[in-house]
Image (cartoon, rainbow, N blue to C red):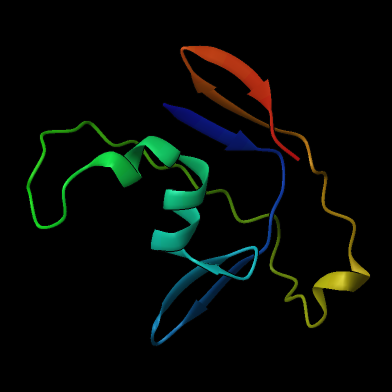
Length: 83
C-alpha cells in the first residue's frame, strides 16, 4: 500500500494531527481500506514510512482561500487516481 499527494492541509492541535480536516487515524483508514479488515486489538508486523514536507511558514487561516493540488495516487497491487 502506498499513498502520496502533492498537496494537502495539515493541522496540529494538542489533541492530535488532522489531514484535510480528518483525524490521522481516520485518514489512514479511508486511504488504506484494507486496514479495516484487520482484527481490532491485534498486533501486526509492519514497515511504515511517513514523510511530511511543510510548504513554507505561512499559516492558512481559511483552507478555502488556497489552491491545493488534488493530484494523488494510491497503489495497492494496481494504481488508481484518488481525487
